[in-house]
Image 1 (spheres, rainbow, N blue to C red):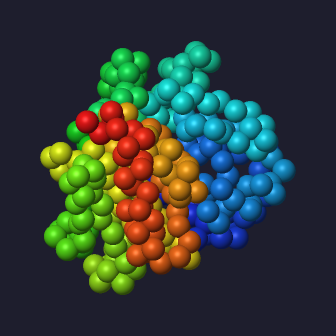
Image 2 (spheres, helix red, strand yellow):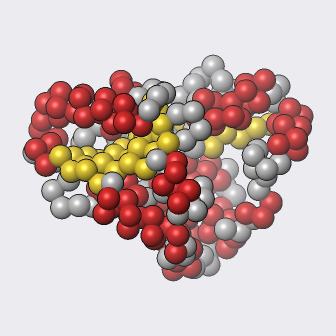
Length: 278
């Protein structure tokens, strides 16, 4: 990604990040609706004296945290909202190839390569404009999806062969990984992204889940087709939320217990949304 070499990570550049957040006059909070979605950075953001500008498309944003809130839950992506902000200020001429590549990548990833229901004619028009400004779409897609490490592919193969569970009567499937299994394949952050989407791609499956052990919690991701509300599932049961078809949550405890909770509540959830599972 253009400019990625300038990004500072809290885990690696702790002191520098702490100082920058504490001294900033203006902090842009992109693609998250509440500071609790930032993990260890939450405490720094809440304590920071600088004005916070939230640009986001998730439901129920934290209005008390934001100094300025630019939220639209119908938007396909935060990148689309950023483009709209640039557009409304008549600054589209400032979007060059590098900027356009970043915006396009954000749109592609948040729309599932333009396949989610949030993708609109406006989304495609923006993509077309970015192409006209010189971005190379095939390079963005190649960097996103065609640069998998061998370890990642081995992990995906293992997960789908050994850790996939299908519940056919509820048109649901899930996969799960323990920390030692990730260590076995030398998995790095980001390698498990997309695994839940592969589960959802199974013919006949309408709801997919992914459970993984993280630091002190179980991280949970859900994806769905049609009008099945994964955000409701996460909000009511796993301290999370997100979009209609793509949401995340957490569980404090053992991964087996998190899965058992999901399996236990699933029949009632399916019954509540019976038409969506048909």
